Amino acid sequence: MAKYKPLRKLRAIRRAADMTQKELAEKVGIAQKAVCGYETGQNSPSLPMLERLAAALNVEPRDLI
Image (cartoon, rainbow, N blue to C red; front, side):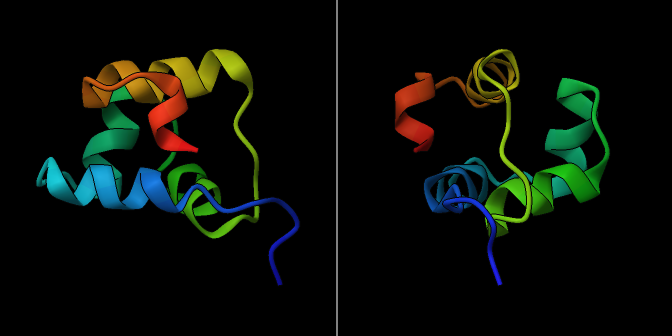
């Protein structure tokens, strides 16, 4: 069961960018498991991390939530 609101748009945008969770994780310097947690709602990214994820995907942070 999700503890946080899943970032479903993160998953959709990542997939549209033809990027795996592992590739995104490496780009922002975190573990692949963290990206998975953000997408499923098991974890919630901090604001700085949300900004790093958005920058790696060339979108605005608000586009991910």
